[in-house]
Length: 375
Ligand SMILES: Cc1ncc(COP(=O)(O)O)c(C=O)c1O
Image (cartoon, rainbow, N blue to C red; front, side, top):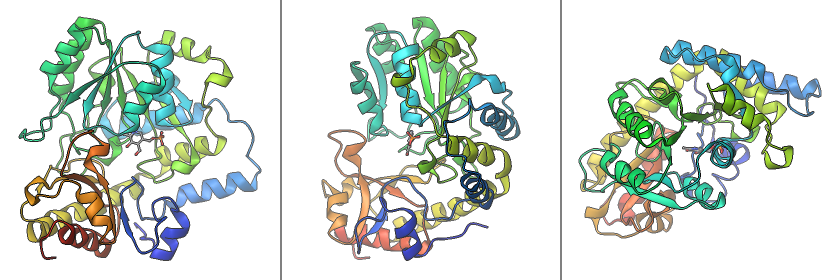
């Protein structure tokens, strides 16, 4: 059911990820798998119909997302709550600019790097809440969040589930954050793009809006269904007042969505559950393989439990190389350097496991060669 791309197919399909000849790419978050057939069919059909005009308002997308949320998470959210946007990051930007109170923005670290950029672009001050790399778990530091709110921050950018830590916050963890947000009248923007990618055995995903009805969710089918080119995402805003404020934003200030994004997102949320099941099974197998390969070839590495996403976080500090990603490149393997996610953090890498078993083995071998362990 999950069709692997050959190297030639992957180079043609994913030119950014595969841009460097001779390098096995395990960096940017794209999967070396063909997208689900219903998405291909719907997009081809839309192009044949000439459906390349301005996008509709996205009612179908909202209804399809509501169905997905109810089936997968038991979350009843009305279709009217969804408002389309061109991408998750542009949705976050518009939410920050239009819906969030002024003042500094709390960003737990490590973070997806554009989280820091979007805070800068909107002219806000960033308040980092770093995870101690020696900490036993990857839960949010709520004491630090509380201090940041007490010092004046009024917005927090949450990644639920977390890229790059692979952490799936529990309902209790999120409820505690929601209580803090209520106490300080702060708003949480929850990026839930990785939510369908909670892997076997993980804590059930908790939609943040089910613990905090003043929150703003931004999500998209594009990550799970491997189709960022379609430029479709949505804000989920149960509060009518939020939707009215957003609807009043002048067109030039919006990053408008695409008609093809609405087509692809609608089909993905509505018709691709079987493919998603197969994907999660496949990613769980890849995760198991990575655990074994790391134990065998990178014995001093610490891998954070990968409960969601296909992006594994490895701590290689005990191997004694400050920038293992740079060293791995010299061995024909591209992984993402930890300092991209937490400036100043040495010795960590993020590894994309959504590839073939062979390539994953080559990636670990390249890393092992780079940090001096025979592979
Ligand atoms: C947490 C997170 N948010 C947003 C995005 C990007 O979303 P978009 O391309 O829709 O802006 C990514 C991509 O990997 C991501 O990991």
